[in-house]
Image (cartoon, rainbow, N blue to C red; front, side, top):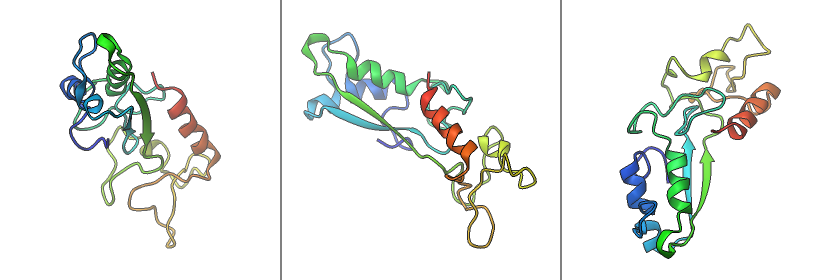
Length: 158
């Protein structure tokens, strides 16, 4: 499930997808006899759970704005009330992009902390063949501090 469309952006959508925890309602995933769901939890340096490294919640879609969609999915998927089968939740992320192509990242984006070319230690941007930042403001996967940051993004989800 991608994070740009309906599916898990509020509790009602999670209930429809995976059933209401504590009840016998199974949800569409179980009705389809699926045993796993793959869910996008990070879009462009924004997340659908409380980030241990301070990344902001999705800038659009979540309701309420601080809805912990990942935890809601896990709670519903692991609920076995009434004989429901447990569903595996696999989280996936967009790793390096910090913005939509051609769009300036929002003020609270991690991009702004690591986009000063005069500070090579903290300049994490991928450059294209012309020496300009990529359209999606992608971080450089070869920068050691960027690698550590992304490890922390994955390690310190609450």
